Amino acid sequence: MNQNLEVEYKVMVSKEEYDRILREFPGYHEITQTNHYYHGNPEDIYFRFRDLGDHYLFTHKEKAAKGKMEFEKEFRRIDLNDPELLSYLASKNILPPYTEAASLTTVRRELDLEDEANLCMDENRYGDITDYEIEYEITGEKGSLKRFKELLKKAGIRYKKSPASKQKRALEEARRTSDK
Image (cartoon, rainbow, N blue to C red; front, top):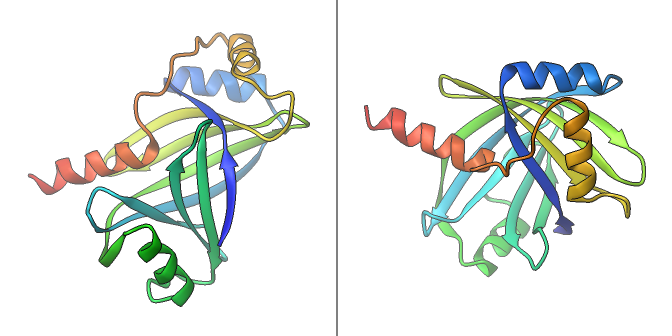
């Protein structure tokens, strides 16, 4: 299992703001990815498999002093019976049965800002909802919240911390639609 520290900042934006930032920062590459969110027992702890087309990436995140610690492993397909995965989940007290709780598809337009961060402009679809989010994933020493705010300002966007993660939004929508 690989692990790395994830430090990122996010802001939800309107469709108009999203289109503006795409124009302000051309040269991005585009990928489509689908996150499948699972829980075991207890039901309030989640992990995901991200479908990247030719492979899947298992990810479980835990809060860290700064950011989140990510535990990851690549798979050719979703394999909830993989021995290393089962051992890892058991070590975190996430026990079977494992159930898919929600999914979310993102069209990600990503720009590598050398020695700083990745600027990710995400169009997310889950249930009947489409929303837009800008992520600034720090990858180098020059990355900072101050720098992210400067980039947003260039596109006429004010920083306001994102109220909920993609996972939380997808889970809330899945619960809402299942209650109907």
